[in-house]
Amino acid sequence: MGDVLKYKRMLLKLSGEALMGDDAYGINTTVLEFVAAEVKKVVDIGAELGLVIGAGNIFRGVAGASKGMDRTTADNMGMLATVMNSLAMQDALERIGVITRVMSAIPMQSVSEPYIRRRATRHLEKGRVVIFAAGTGNPYFTTDSAGVLRALEIDAEIVIKATRVDGVYDCDPLLHPEAVKYEQLTYDEVLQKGLRVMDAAGIALAKEDNLPIMVLNMAVPGNIKRAALGEKVGTVISV
Image (cartoon, rainbow, N blue to C red; front, side, top):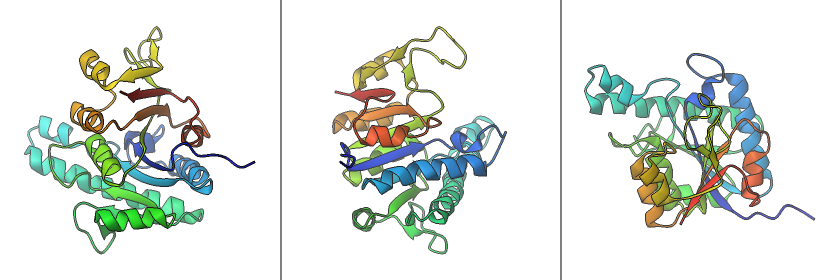
């Protein structure tokens, strides 16, 4: 008997930092190939997958602004950095036979398609992985917010936020060994407790449409596939 999907269409949100691996900066090709292989496992069982990748491994707009740069300029640079990550991920996926399209919120026709919702949905229906680049195309919005926004636009059933830890904790488990993990949270609990899962705008947007968010450890092989099959992985944020 084959695998039975619980979530047919998903949005995977990946931080830019995740692509660094143990490097101090940039894109670690070993990590890139690992992530691509994990995505392929999900595509192979019939899931439709959109990806949003951050830019923290190259340039973070907020950090640039904190050092005196104009915030809009810094955010625009961060959005351009996400395009670099998206092209790298597309290359890694296509090298293992996964047909992929990069759609950018900032038009860059030489390297990507412009983001058009109906075209993105059509790509997904044809079994292509769609990587949504350049965030929302607007400054002051994070790629977390972009991930939730794109998930709602493509009618994804869940947002999977892939991180370095296996769920949401009451404090950073990498710094505090006594940190307590939450199995389940509501949107309001995330906001009230000030948990740094994703920015408040992203959580509020997900809450408005009851879009569940699953936070899991990207480094564990098979985790995304298990999530797609409905197994309990990491922490689920829902109503």
